[in-house]
Image (tube, rainbow, N blue to C red; front, side):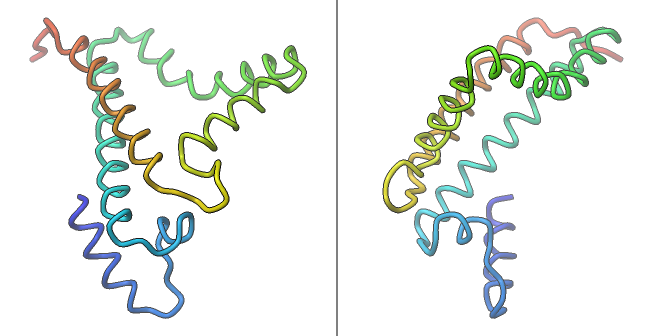
Length: 138
């Protein structure tokens, strides 16, 4: 997927009005772009695999709970933010700013690469637990 993404991006880069996601966020940096794209796609694939494994291992009720979780997270975060007088969101955004390389004067893509790879490793650990003794469904 990373190679296909790079080929499509190289083809579209010839257009004068095209800027890929990486260039829009971090600017031009060819080596960092390849690392960032690879790390992001590994993270996205790992997350998709984890969600698939959760659905595979879950009963019908838990499948509904997993499906509704993203919808419920936003109101819960909003309530917790109100209870902490806005400190929760401020802290969350400060962490995300640092984790994705926006804490300095210029955006740096390398912290985002590390963040994606560490997140992928954590997700793989969850996947290993989900795969352990997974029942084979026919």
